[in-house]
Structures are given as structure tokens and as C-alpha cells.
Image (cartoon, rainbow, N blue to C red; front, side, top):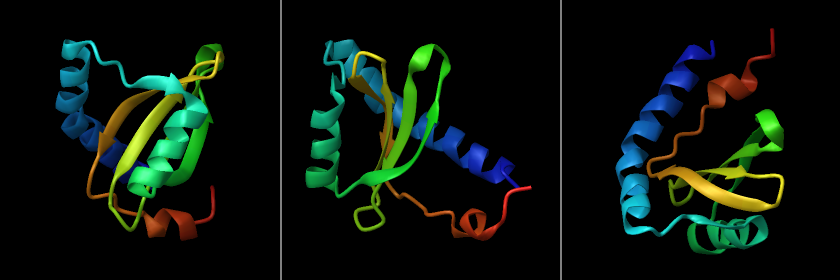
Length: 104
């Protein structure tokens, strides 16, 4: 069932929102060319891409995470190649049950 996964993502976003709001308040937008952000996520946090999906108007949403460090980041990349971190947090939990369940 996908509902627990959706609820977990929503809760994760709520916990990450204060940190993102702080960045917005200081004017420090967490945006840069995609390759730079992906390199930093891998080098600094050990995060790799775990999934992706298309949004309207050509944007791509990606989830990066590390089972070792427990950190995770959600990026939105615009068609011009600029990515923005829209959520980030700790205590990443791999949903093994959903990986083993065949699609309906």
C-alpha cells in the first residue's frame, strides 16, 4: 500500500520545512547547477539517487539518500538545469517492503 509511504514523505517535508524557511529568510537559495549539487550530495553526505519523477512544465523531482549517513534530500531540477533543494533531513528509512511488492 502506498499510503504509508506518502504519509512518511509528508511528515519528512514538515520536519525539513523550518530549515528551508531559514534559508529563504536569509536569501540563501539552495539552488545551483544540478551536477554541482549531485556531486556535493555524494561527497559530503554519501547520498545517491533513489528515485525520480516528472512534474508539469518539464521539471524533474529526485530523491537522494544515504543508508549509511541517514541523510536525504529532495531536489527539483528545472528544464534549464538548475536544481533546488526543496527538502532535506535525517533518519532516512529504506522502505524494503515496497521494493519487494510487485506493482498492481
